[in-house]
Length: 227
Ligand code: SF4
Ligand code: SF4
Image 1 (cartoon, rainbow, N blue to C red):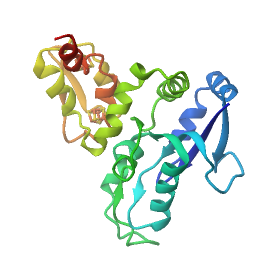
Image 2: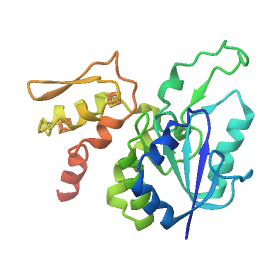
Image 3: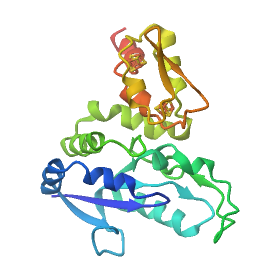
């Protein structure tokens, strides 16, 4: 049985709620895994050795406990998954500037992807239930092709941006105008103009959801392989 841990850092718990929103699919997932750690749902104090750790939330660099937990997860888990925008790319915690009671010195937050080596990152605020189940199922089956965009986002971390679909797809004449990127954007930062996406930078929270969902984002890489 595959051992899975859910770890919460600086987050709202919405990613775990999204996992629960999979309803009957959650029961299928829970039949295939052993949930060995989840402070919201199970009474285990220490993070045990596990196969997959789903980590939600960013890391407060001014909080030694937050840093220690991130390092502990890396030691204990074979596969570390940054679950949701805060862990993957920083999310709303990128806007934190400190000076709030009761910990005014807690001012710097980094996505998990910039603090430890992360294997897969699932974007979204929260990530969709389908994406979470899809990644867990693919990880259980070793489906590396399905996981590739999530592995790429884990490497990219806070560099992710709505501009990615423009540079990598539209500017290379690969966009087919399907609108998937606009549908995936949680802040409506992408509008379709004349059948092509236009990114409204002031609305983009740099979550990476648009590029992970774009069916053509990996075309340049695939073309290189063919050549
Ligand atoms: S354009 Fe939207 S989906 Fe893409 S990175 Fe920005 S906020 Fe995320
Ligand atoms: S998802 Fe990709 S192919 Fe579809 S409209 Fe957006 S950039 Fe174009």
